[in-house]
Length: 273
Image (cartoon, helix red, strand yellow):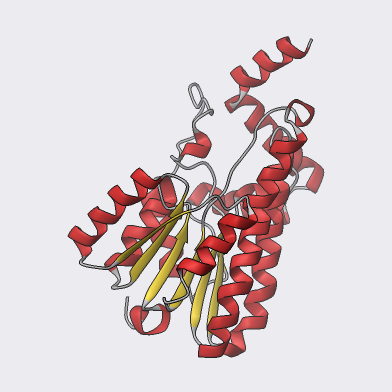
C-alpha cells in the first residue's frame, strides 16, 4: 500500500484490539509499517498480541488497558499517547446487547451507548484535533449493516451504529480539506465475540472472516468513505436503499435476528412470562 506509512504513520491507535476485527486491524496495519497502540480491557490478551506483532512485523507496540465506557478510560488513552504521533485512529471497540428491548437493563443500554457512541466521539475529537494541526491522518470507525434501518432485538445497538455511520460521513466532509481521510465500515455477521450468541444452524448465512473485514477497510481508507465488506452486505445495502421501504427493511432484518437469536429469545420469553 504505497505511501501508507507517510500519510497515516508513524503510529496507529486501535480500540477493541484484544480480539476479532481489532486484532486483525492491529496486524494488518503493522504489516504496512506503522507502530500500533492497542486499547482494550484485557491486559494479557493485549500483551500476547503485542509480542506477536513485534516478532512478526518488527513494529513497536504500546499496550493501553482501559475501559472505554468510562471517562477514566478515555482519559487514560489520551494520557498514555501524549508522546506518540497518532496518524491513524481505528474506532473498533463495540458492544451489542441482544434480546427484547425491555429485557435488557437501562444500565446495559447506556454502557452500549458509552462504548459505541461516546468513546468514538471523544477519541475522534482528541486525535482529530492533532491531525488537523499536522494536516494529515486517517480515521476508521466501525458501524454495521444494521445501521441503515431499525432492527428488532438489537434496537439500541442498531441505533448506535446509525450514529457512527452518520457521524463519520459528516466529519469526512469537514476533514477532507485538512488531508484527513475518514471511512466508516458496515460489516454484517462476522466471526467475533459479538456474534457468540448467534445460532446460524439451518440458515444459509456464513459470518465474514474478521481478517477480511479489517484488510478491506484499511485498503479502502482514502478511497471510499463507506466501506461495505462482503457481497451479501453490498446487496442488502443497495436493495434496502432502492427496492424496499424502511418498514420492509426493519421487518426483514427482524426476521433474520429472530432466527439467529431464537434460542435466547425463546428462553427469555419463558422467563419473563
